[in-house]
Length: 201
Length: 107
Image 1 (cartoon, rainbow over the protein chains, first blue to last red):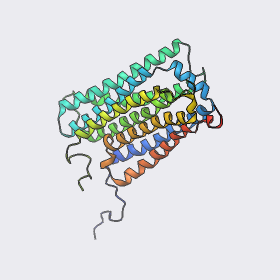
Image 2 (image 1 turned 90 degrees about the vertical axis):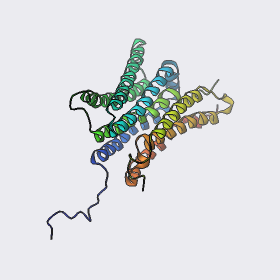
Image 3 (image 1 turned 180 degrees about the horizontal axis):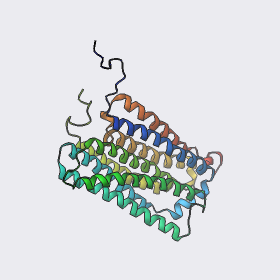
Image 4 (image 1 turned 45 degrees about the vertical axis):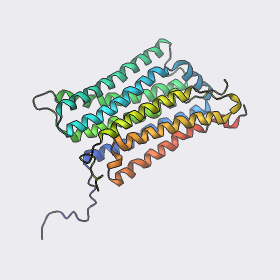
C-alpha cells in the first residue's frame, strides 16, 4: 500500500552514476578518435611514401618515448592516489596526485619542444598530409591532457586547504578519464612515430 | 562474489606495479621492434610482421590499462561488455593499418 516508487521492476545497474556517465563519455571519445584513425589509415596507405618519409625524417622517437613513460607513470600514480584517498592516507594521496600532475606537465613540456622544433623547420599542418594528421591528432590528444590537468590541479590545491579533499569517487572518475588519455597515446605513438617499416634496406 | 567491488577486497597494489612494469617493458619492446628493418627480399611479409608486432603490443597494453588501472576486471559485466564492444571495434579498425596498398605492388 506504500506510495513509494516500486523499484523491483526497474533496471538498476548498481553502478555509481558518475562512473557510468564517464564510461559513456569515454565510449563516445573512442568514436571521436576512431574518426581520426580511420581517416589516417586510409590516407596513410594511399600516400605511404609521404607518410613514411615525413615520419622517419622529422619525428623524434626518443622524445615520444619519453612522453610515453610520462603518461604510463602518471597512470600508475593516478591509480595509487585513488587507492590512498580511499584509505584516508591524505599525505600519500597528495604525493601521488602531485606526481601525476608533474608527469602531465612534463608531457606538455616535451610536446612544446616537439612542436617548436617542427615550426623551427617550417613544418606546419599545411606542409603535407602527414603533418596535417600529426598536428590534428597530437593536438587533440594534447587538449585532452590539458582537460585532465585542470580538475586534477583543482583537487590537488583543494587537498591543501583546511577542508581538504575527500571525494574519492570523484577522483576515481577523473582517473578513468586520465587512463583513457593514456590509452589514446598507446595507439597514437606507434601509428605516428613507429609503424612505418621501410621496404628497402 | 569477491570481485563485485573494485576496492576493499585483497590488495590491488601488486597488480598495479606489475601492469606498470609490463607497460614499460612493452614500450621498450615496441620501440625496439620498430627499428628492425626486414630485408626487401621478404617483401610484404616483413611489413606485416613489423606492423603486427606493434599493433599486438599496443592491444595488450590497452587491455591491461582497461582491466587493471580502469578496474574493468572487477566491474559489472554489463559495463564491461558496454565498453569492450567499442574498444574491440576500434582495435579492428587500427589493424586495418596492415592493409597497406603495397599489397598490390610487387617489390
